[in-house]
Image 1 (cartoon, rainbow, N blue to C red):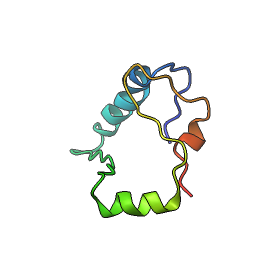
Image 2 (image 1 turned 45 degrees about the vertical axis):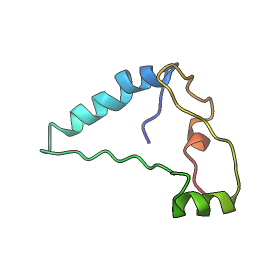
Image 3 (image 1 turned 30 degrees about the horizontal axis):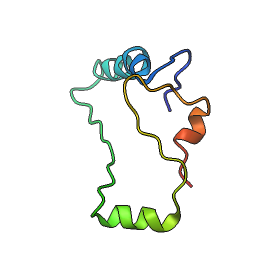
Length: 77
């Protein structure tokens, strides 16, 4: 997990942590695949997720503040 350190927003995190890490990885390989997961309303995944409970939802934008509880932001039970 790439910790945000002193980043205030997701844009800061992108520029100062995430993209430099990807650039570093590209020095030792020819390809890096980055995959995001998306829960579409009409998908089986969304249905299964809905049955597990709601939890806290957060829409992430460039100017959104980095959550203080970074580890639990990504937690998966």
